[in-house]
Length: 112
Length: 111
Image (cartoon, rainbow over all chains, first blue to last red; front, side, top):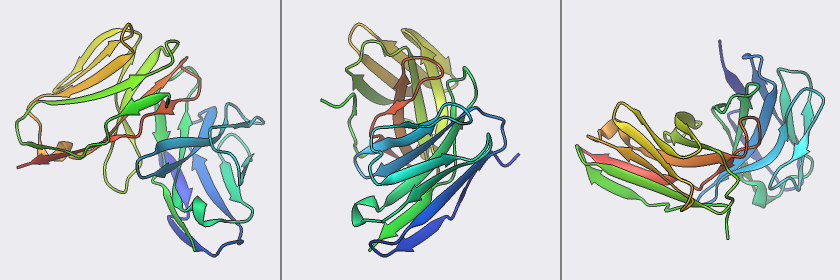
């Protein structure tokens, strides 16, 4: 099992460009999450999907959109990147009635 | 006031020391408490979890929850250089609810 995979691992964008971060899990988990991690701020929830077909905003959703494509895949889209979106992005998944979240390796995004 | 607060450190200790990491929180409804360990340039991994109040021990690690004080702790005994990482506390209302993370404490264990 690969667990949670994320692509790409690194990305540099210019202000105003768009991109989609991909996430997939092979653990048959219902819930999936997107976080961003900035120095001194910890992990902040952007969006989450409690089950296939549902998505909800987290703490910092502005400037992002998500798609829960199927049970395995949950993508995060930046429509018009801004320097404030420079961060490390983590995808995570969680099984039904389980406390543990499994994290992907992260995507390091720089917006210039 | 942030929902979960944690001293960011960095904390530097000699090998073999006992380490105490702490978090405070504001929402008394939290029931599930977790500690994640994150090595540099990696995703977080669950280290320990506790439901409601009390202690839990796993090898060199002990997690404590004091709900009356809204305070949780992680103790590491006989610390090793391999324990050098950032430790994130986390908590949630239920086992399937969103998880709120603290900012993390950076720990270095010096050989």
